[in-house]
Length: 100
Image (tube, rainbow, N blue to C red; front, side, top):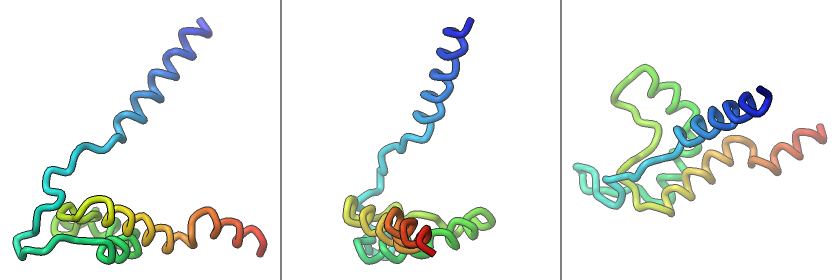
């Protein structure tokens, strides 16, 4: 009985983690209607404002959390970097917070 419970928990966790896996971005590296593609600096900006953008995106259909018309890896790197800066530098920020 214990083995079945462990197997069910493992299966549940595996399903939950696989449901979070991202799919392909079919409009990556294609310009928006105005002809622009978001790059590194736009990614940094979107990462910095991501907490506010997320809350606004819950209540309106015109605001998106993430720019799908981006140049790929550099936009993603900028987004993660910007979000990390907002969250006090990630791991290093948490060390600084513990010293206080």
